[in-house]
Length: 265
Image (cartoon, rainbow, N blue to C red; front, side):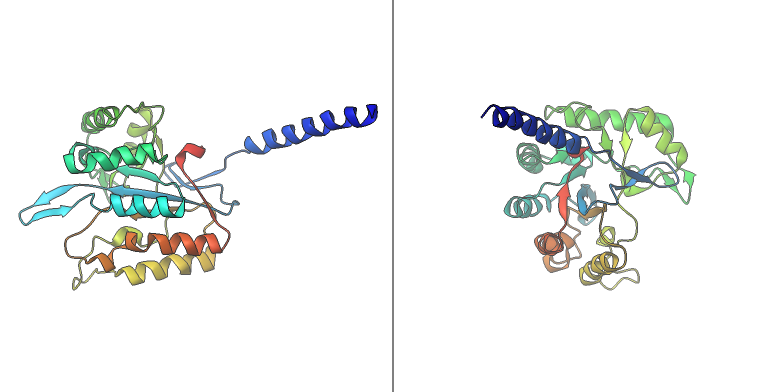
């Protein structure tokens, strides 16, 4: 009996050490040419779902909005999956979205932002916005996030507006204390703003086909998969990628993928 009593604590200690060792597994990032993260743990069968949105108006009413957030949250809840949300700060100020923003927080999803006014930072590498303008916009964004009780330690991962930047603007955002992450290239999920009938139109069917083609050719290991949690007026509900979020999750789960958020970093 003495031998058994001695062995059991040793075995327990080894198990605990093993668990602790696994929990501290090194995070591996892949970066683009500006040093922005676009894949996380590429050897791990895990997908990082990231959702962006903006709210803006034009002469005909809204051009884009955050109306997709509730369907997205409902699907994530049903599938028991967590995501990372990066709406622009202006979305936090629109009254009809404030309950959904609190749901993002209360239901355990990661919440950060995408700038306040969706600044276009550069075009074909040419800087369009001054450092002072970025700082002023980000101050508004931070004030909007902090109204929900969040601190910068909680929202320090950030997707640049339009997922567009150059070295100069990326450096400014880092100087403001942000870690930059961007959706993995090679997907068309960000093209759901294109309108049916337009020369550049890409249907949701094509967008979904592109996801599965990428998976078959490259795997989805470590992919940051962008899905817009917003509506564009010229598309029907059947032509919005987030409508098929549940199907995307089910297929990925069936292939052995799990899901993580920026909280896991």
